[in-house]
Image (cartoon, rainbow, N blue to C red):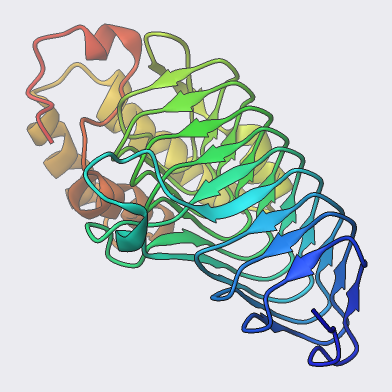
Length: 281
């Protein structure tokens, strides 16, 4: 096809871009790429080579998409056909490395598969259907997200980790490499292992992101009240912590996550996970 429709867009002659696609100015499409008819790509993006973007996919501005990335293909959810696939939405300034695969959403998902701004997806990352990866998150090499996983802002996932369907990883949390994640991880914390365990706080990450000493102290105190204290059941410790620390923004982030964002069991330190605690949320 002729590339005359696309103004100020560089398209390598070996690539195919459907004439119904929308490509923003300044975007460069390298060799052997395929862009489908329902794809919308913003300004100043770079597609290195052999990139396939299909389905109802919308991509923002100034993203870098490396070789052999596939975006918008049918998910592994066998309940739905390719015709029922919904959307993929990707924000601005993302770095999507080699062999990453981002599946289309399904009719069950509230807003399709969604990637925020300034997200770094290292090579061989798999983003399942209806996942949400929020601003500034980093997924290391060969991370696998099951369907409908939520990775909150600035969370870091170690390489070769697998995250179970419906899990939520809190903001500024870090997951160690090669972990099997089947429980939700509270904000600001560290989780690791197979089986998974809560291993303290992401203090290095908090300092790098310029959290104040007062905020870090509050996070430590809430963590101790919830996960180190042996006084009372989980529900009682949560109520006690809220009575003392509610109103402090970083504490409220943890409480809101536990009470509203979490959809599975909250991950606890290993002795807590194996206890008879009433952790049924």
